[in-house]
Image (cartoon, rainbow, N blue to C red; front, side, top):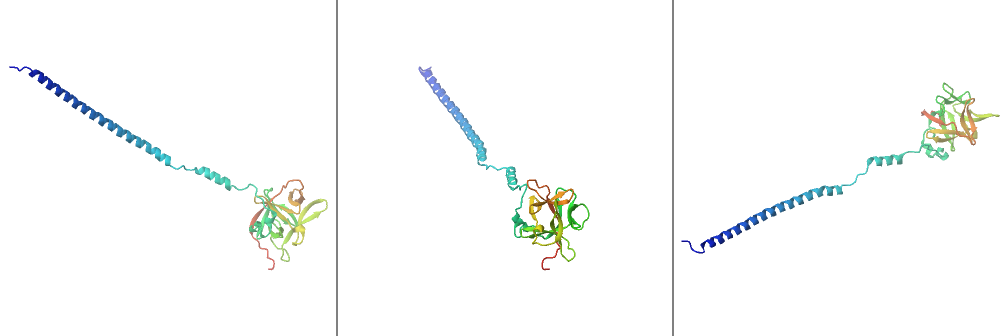
Length: 247
């Protein structure tokens, strides 16, 4: 026999069980969702850290200057002058020119005109000229004297002394260069030697510069407003063998 009211009690019990099951399911869903959210958050933080690290390293990397630019600047600073010049004081004994053994009279040299491809300067039969063969005197010594130079033959002649170049007058003809016994007291034997183009030099006596001449070989010419057309190069041919004063 069924008691009155028994079925409604069972229904209420079932409803409570159903409600408790739903609540448990909701808690499980919430827990899973929270775990997923936490995992996503951790992954996002990890990605942010790794992406920011290279940027931080890059920001702290020092800049490196370009070696090519520095080398170019250094080469430009060290580049020498195209046409160095020498003041007359540099050819005086004790000046910077005295450090050059050729200009100090310690070497014997061939005097070669730069504008002539084969010829050299020679003293032949008492006259200075240009040759491309044999001659009596083809080697010279540049002997500094009171800021100028005696240009001596590298070989001595009779009497044991060298000859010196000297300016000679020839009436209405151009001045020429000959030879005479050396005398530092005579102005016509004292020559000025100045660098004009690197290792090339001008040679002058007073205002008259030694110049090539097709007719006379070498002449001494006052230039005035005319350009200098002949320069010389000194080719080292060993130590001078001329006796020193007092020997």
